Image (cartoon, rainbow, N blue to C red; front, side):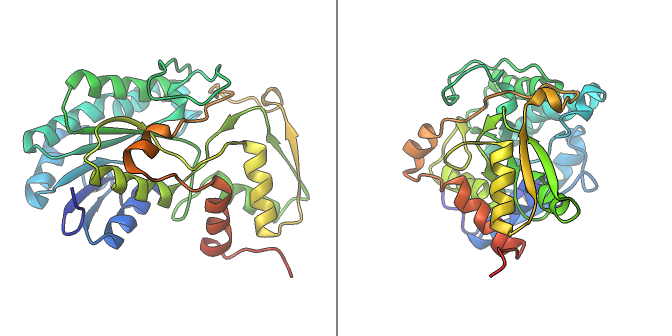
Length: 293
C-alpha cells in the first residue's frame, strides 16, 4: 500500500520515543498521522479508542504505546501485563472490525539471551523478566486472535530524538563525571527510532504481515554503545567496562539479544544502515555535539 494521503492513528505518538519518530516519518512520506497519548484515549478501554477511530477513520492503526520501564515492571506487574499483554489483542480487534492494518511493536527481551548467533523470527520466545514475559504474551495474544493484517515488529535498544534514552543519559553524565562504568556482557542491536519508523513504512508499503525483526545493522554491548557515543560527542570521559554482576538490576536482562534482520531485508530489499552511522546522526546532527577541533 502507498502511504501518501493515508490517515495513520499512532497510539503513543504524542510523547513516545518511537511514536514521535513514526509521526515525523509519516508526515515526511505525505501521510496524515494522528498522534495520541494516554491523555487522549485509554488503550485498555476499547470504547475510548473506538470513538477516536470512528472520528478519524484511519487507514492504519499503530500501537507504539507500551509499558517499557523494565525494572519497575517487576513491582508493577499488573500494569505491565495490562498494557503489554491485554491491550494489543483488544486494539487488533478494533482494526479487524475496520479491515485496516494493525502494527504492534515488541522487543528483543522476549528472548532468554542464551544464543550466540542472532535471533530469528522463528526462534522460540523464553523471556524471564516481567517486561519480557508481558511483551511475549502480547505477541501470543495477537497470534491467537489471528487477524491477517497484523504486523508485529520486534525492536531493541531504542534511542533517538524527542525523549530521554540510554545514549542521551550517558552523554549527560559525561558532562558531570570523569569516569563512568557501563556493562559490557550484554550484547544487542541498537535501534535508531527514525530508522525504525522508515523501516515500518517500507514494510507497510510491501503489505507485510506476521513477525519481523527490525533494528540497525551490526551489534555491540552497552559499553560499546556508550563509548562510541562519547567519542562522537567529543566527551572527555573514561568509560570503563564492567560485568552485569557489578551492576545488579531488579529485572534480569538477556546477555545476548542480537536480532537477525534477514527477513526484513528480503521483504523490503533494503538493508538497515549500521548502528554507528545512525548514532553519529543522532549525536552530531540531532544533539549538535561533536569532537572539539
